Image 1 (cartoon, one colour):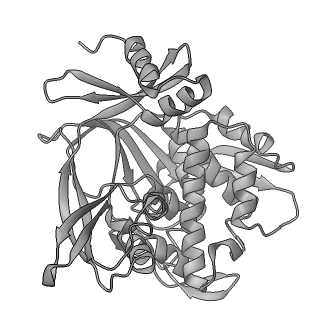
Image 2 (tube, rainbow, N blue to C red; image 1 turned 30 degrees about the vertical axis):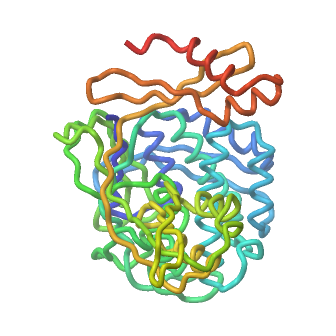
Amino acid sequence: MKILRVEPFSGLSGDMFLGALLDLGASADKLQSLPAILGLAGASIRIDPVDKCGIRCTKVTIVDDTPAQHRHLSHIVDLIGSADLPENVKALAGRIFNIVGEAEAAVHGIPVEKVHFHEVGAIDSILDIVGAAVLLAGFEFDGVVSDPICTGSGFVDCAHGRLPVPAPATGKILQGLPIYSGAIQAEMTTPTGAAILKALDPVFTPRVLNITQTGYGAGSRDFEQPNCLRLGLGESVDSDTSGIDRMILIQTNLDDTSGELLGGHFQDLLLAAGALDVNLCPLLMKKGRPGQRLEVLCREQDRENLSDIILAETTTIGLRWFPVQRTVLPRKSEVVPTRFGEVRVKCVTLPSGRIRKAPEFEDCRKLALAAGVSVQEVMFEARDSCPSSD
């Protein structure tokens, strides 16, 4: 199982991520072409080797000669959506921006649509986030493992005044993740850096890894310790190669919520907010009342937001939640051609080592609607187009 390891011993920032990914071997040309792809005239990206306490690191600097302007999240989503970028890059960049936007909205007590992205709307942060999505797409890994995150301590000056470290938006993003202050009084982790890591759904459980590549991304300031982010690529050599993930299961019993409220819209809200699985099971409740048990599987960092959605969208007045474990088989996705169009196929490695392949239903459904054929016909052809699984 290929693993990306993150070591934020001096915190996280967008430029540190970019530098470390370039140091791992990501394409500098792809990163430096981004300003033109995004239509950000007047911006450019400089890449330099620097020394941090004797360690050679890669430093990324965004050069921006355009007038400063504030942008709403919708403006940034439109900017990314209209760019000539792969869909997986757009999806990851959008997820990172949503994480920051929701944190800012929660801190200021306003809807996310009204958040002015003072820092995140700036060109350097747009390039940090989209650049990270572009460079990450160039690597193949099955999971992300991170060490606890150093936040720094003290106070930081920003547009809203003098704020404690971690800044409120950063602290909101980091909820549910293991953090520590460290010895340095400075802002070591920024909202952008925290959001990039959170969007990767890292696991903080120790793993035994065989690291084959290492990259260092430099921060802007110099401290008595190396101000850099270290990333590693390697293979998991744990005895547990099946991939045990630690999850949260949220439960509640409902006997006075209509089926309409628990239908597609509600479940779509949960899935969009990070739920990994949503199910409803009929049960007989006290006094013989028929009801349903709602169960939502999620990661710890998404528990609070999902709980808020459940409390707001249903009639429940309380929730149960507890840690669970799940065993996950290694999987990857490949694309196969059919006469109807391309179909993504999920390839799952079984304990025996054999590969089980299954066409993605949504791809088949869309192609079937366009061609006026049954979904099964598209699925059969996709299976026939797969290379042998033996």
